[in-house]
Length: 120
Image (cartoon, rainbow, N blue to C red):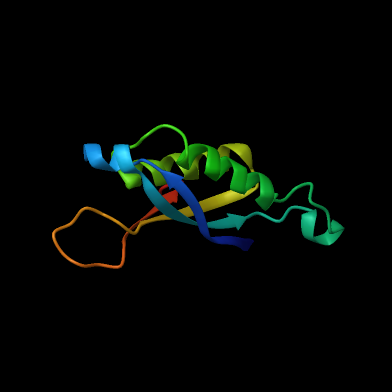
């Protein structure tokens, strides 16, 4: 097994429970840690049989910038499920989504959620 890590993929979207979050939108950051079954891809030095991270980025972008989700947990799960469906070589997808401007009554850097799929 090996891990492909995609860090700080940034997208503008409108997720959240509050109406202002949908109206104003904000930037969301996604990390994808993909544990991959190597098959012959490493020995053959071939893209076929591994995860094309350009395509993986597009899958993430389509979901994050698409349908509004109230929970970033639900968003992360959808990303994980879509990536494992698109790439059967992925044995485990760990998806982290950061929301820098979470509406909380205080100062914080960001709120972050991590979902692992499939669940153990």
